[in-house]
Each structure stands twice: as structure tokens, then as C-alpha cells.
Length: 564
Ligand code: AMP
Ligand code: MG
Image (cartoon, rainbow, N blue to C red; front, side, top):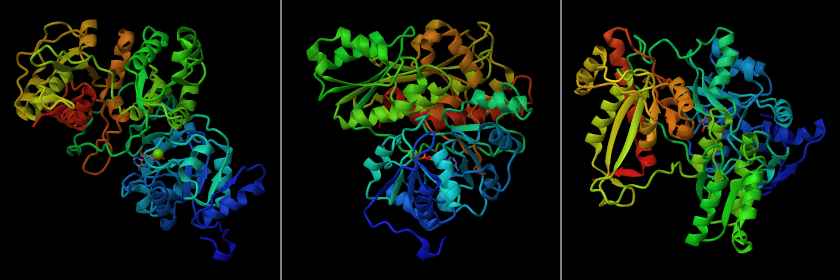
């Protein structure tokens, strides 16, 4: 820390706003950082609230200013790649490859931390997330400060991340001494967080950099195997059973209730119109906010009467299918519709595996992570919610998942509809295979593992090929690897939004599986076919750990609770 006399002073309760133009403009905010004070600054993703990462007292001020829970780790920002080695114990070839390919850029790499990083920064974890932002203002500020800068998003905990200096002002004015204004953020969604402590990358939070981009960059360099990893999720030395879930990160909470409007047959126009009309028919409380694209806006303007129109406040992000524009405008849209006092927000949903995935992750958090489900049939004695597991041949992984899920449902049930304690809802799973032959029995290794570990009987199983009907009739569809999800979505594009791999679902829900040694376990399960008996057992154990970790989120998404 600098000598006190050299430290700038900002009176308590005052917040200076800087619009940097020349190098000299960075001297004041950089000195504040170097002196252990907080400075908010722009990055290409969202605005960050920075403090000297090596100064524990400075870092503590971040948690206080934001009201952030202490178990949520901070990301450490650097201005040069050469500043990274002292912050970590080692850099694996995978980490190096990703640093070369994506830094500076919207990516955070989780690596084993060195002693320079206080436990407060990493929330007690043995790892630290490192990021080099691609924003000239951030880089200049960090370089001038001469220290690594720990920075979470510069919002109050629980509100949407800030993508403009005005958002930071609204949340933190008077609580921090300085905001550096660099205009609106370009990406608008927080960085992709990737655990690179292992030889295979695990995406902990989706962002603009996707798994296929990682694979493209590092498979070419021979760092990553193409396609799925060929080692089983649990290798022979690692007997550790993964710990149950870490769904600890807070959700954004807009004041307005949010509904997601998904495209159908590639179009959202009629879905918007129906949703608007039904809101107006209900005479919902307050006005309706609509977060949509240009031609959707024009369409609604044309279809609605002037009186109906008066009930609506629009936020138009750009072209209807422009995911970049939608992501850039998302948090600004939520914030501005919220402050206009709307009672409900209809927000554009997107289908896709790129930025769309990260966008939907944030949108669903804002919407309370609820999927629109078919209403339960009230006239039946016990209406049902159902889950489908899909693998390749439906003879091993998916039948085991089915058996494990049904066993858990039997143990944890009975279930009732959320908010209707006296209702009764049945819950069950089935399974199918993308390339299955109808009627094959389960593999012997799978039958044995299911019997030994879960006392489940797969001997009567008959494999089934995945059909259109199965996809539409089930409420949720999980595939055992990401590749399966990609293929299945290609086969059933209309219902693509229903289909997710375990790994995609877990990253969207911030569910993290850890082994006993704290390392993150991957949720993609390779085919144990033809392997030793022990590999089948390990696959079954992994499936059990995955389903158990996802269980609360699945029940929540299905709108049911265990009745007691
Ligand atoms: P924020 O910058 O507010 O989006 O918060 C930083 C986020 O980065 C955390 O909520 C975590 O999701 C992630 N993160 C940071 N450091 C780590 C770490 N060491 N291990 C896992 N996730 C991390
Ligand atoms: Mg945040």
C-alpha cells in the first residue's frame, strides 16, 4: 500500500465519477485502488467493483459495499498475462492454451491459488478465478494501479449486473468513493467461468466463450481430445464420491414478475401477442414491460389498440434474432423496465448453444428459473410429471439414470404441486436412446451395477428409440453428454428448448459437483461399454451423484415439492 500522504481522499458518502480521456485521468482512481479503496470500472462484460486483491482489508470493503455473502468468491483481474504466474501455483497446458486463445477476453480461468491471494478473495476455496478483461479503460486502470484487482460485478447483491455507469451509480452511489465511466458494456453478460484445475475444462458459469470455442482452440493444439473425454468420469485412483450440490449463488431478483417468450417455428411475434393479450385480459397489476426485437415491436404496435398500447412499456434491443444485441441490452432492459414500475416483463427467449445459452442462463435466473410447463391435469387422481433420460443405445447409462431417478422419487415422495399441499402429483422417469434398437436388454455390467449399488432391477429393461412423442410428452429431457444434447436438438428442433445435457443443466443452474479433494467433477458421462465391471459401477455412482445434485432444481422446475 502507498504511503498515506500520497493517498487521495474522498469525503465519506461522496462518489466521484471519472470519464477518462488521457492517461492522467487514471492517476486518481488508480491511486485509490493502490491505497486500499474501492473503484468501479467498466469491462467488456459488465462493470466491476474493484479492490487490491492482495489487500484483505480492501477486499472486505467489497463484500460490505455490495452486501455480498462471504461464500461467493471474487474474480481477480490483471492487465497483462505476465501478471498471472505469481497469483497461481501452476499453469497447466490447458490453462496456457486458453490464456493464449481467449485473453484478453470474456473468460475467467479457475486455477489453484498462490499465497498472494487472501482466503477472503476465494471464499476459502483453494482456487482463484483469473481474468484479463478486453476493455482499454479496465486495462489502463489496472496497469496504473500496479496491483491485481479483485472485482465482482458492481451491483448490490441480488440486483442485475450493471452494464452502464448509471447502473452502478444507482446501486452504489455514496457507498464507494469512485466510479470510472467507460460507457455501456459491449457483451452485457458476465464472463464464462472455466475450471482448468483438471485436464478437462469444466464450465462453471456459461458466457460468451462457449465449450465448442474452447474445443476449437485447444483440440487443434492437441491439448484437448476431440469429442468426449475417453477417461471415465471417475478414474481408478479417484474413488471419491462427489459432494452434493453447491447452488449457492443468489438469483437476480427484478421487482417485476418475468415471463420468457420462446420462439415457435423460429418466430416470437404471435407468442408475444398472445402473452400481451392474456396479461391485459387478466388486468394484471400495473403496466406490462416488453423486452423484444424491432419487428416484434412493430408487429405489436400494429395489432394492438391505442388503449392496449398505453398499458405497455417497450424496451427494444435490436433485430429480433440478434442475440448479441439482446445480451447487451438484457440487464439494462430489466433495470429500466423495473424502474418504470411495470408489474410483469415479457422477455425474448433464444434457442442456441452459443451466447444464447449464457443469455438464457441469466434470463432464467431473473425469471426465477421456471420453465413454462403444461398445466397439470386437474381432473386426474394423480397427475404426472415426467423426466426422460437419453443416451446412445438405451442399454446402459440412460436405463441406470431412469432406475436411480425412480428410486429417489419413491424414497423422497409423495409429491404435491407447489402451493397446493393437498394435491398429489406422481413423478417418474423413463429412458430412450438416440440410435437405440427397440427391445434390447440392458448391458450385463449395467444390470449388475444397478443391482449391487441401488438394489434396482434392470433385468426386464427393453431399449427404445427416441421418438417425437417421447420428447413432447416428457416435461424435462436430459442427455448423458453434451454431444447427445447437440444431436437430439438437431433431430427435434421444435422442442430443442426442452433438451439439455446434465452438464448444461448444471452450469445453467450453478450446480457444482465437487470431489472430496475440492476439485470440480465433470458431469458428461462417457460410455462404459466394453469396460471393466468397476467402470460400470463408477458410472452408476456418478449418475447417482449427478441426479442427487440436480434433484432440488428439477423439482423446482417441475413445480412440485415433497409432501410431508
Ligand atoms: P461476479 O463477478 O459477481 O459475477 O462473481 C464472480 C463469480 O465467479 C462467482 O459467483 C463464481 O461463480 C465465479 N468464481 C470466482 N472464483 C471462483 C472459484 N475460485 N471457483 C469457482 N467459481 C469462481
Ligand atoms: Mg455478480
